[in-house]
Length: 249
Image 1 (cartoon, rainbow, N blue to C red):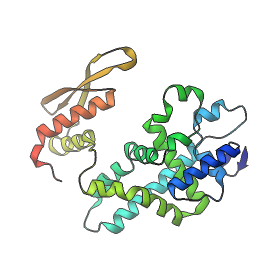
Image 2 (image 1 turned 135 degrees about the vertical axis):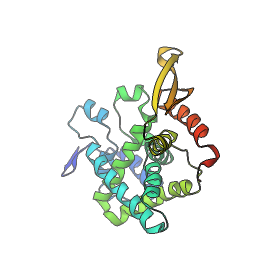
Image 3 (image 1 turned 45 degrees about the vertical axis):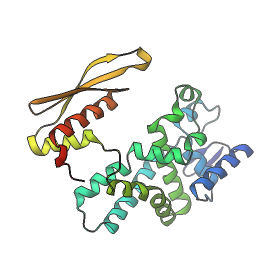
């Protein structure tokens, strides 16, 4: 264990040192203090089960979230002079989303390097989008502390600009739930209302059937492996029915 101003990081064994070196090679970065990177990989579940006192990566995640937001906002402001605040918000909401960050984490094989507890391991923690996205933000925070803002900008732009370009080309996975909410607010001065109408399948593998009401009309139901996915599916149905060919690319 190494203690610093930023927290108590897990001890780096010879094998762990090789793993951290491999990650840095995959990400094309180099940490001066490898213990900061190791701390960024330390999930709360690992820290809670550790026989010695170590900290988790949540403080680094908080910092990294802010660094990420600033770098993406600055890139949008600098490179897209013809777009307004609404466009920036729409693009940024996708680029820094859990879905986007988790995809980047998988490409960098973060799931192989993250430190998680046994309980989290057994429940499939290495594949959870939220866990992977949070770890990515912690890595950004750790790299900012270790190598400074300029290096952080280079790393984040390298990883996130392709996602921005995907949005600009309108080839990204759309957040229909947010789009539908914004449409309903603007058109009807109201919010969509979602309702789970039934659940099917075994308890450990439910399928959720969700319908949505917008103004005076109902849509669905649509299915999803969880409530959130069901809401996205039925929001897409409603969006296409209400907006259809009027959608702006």
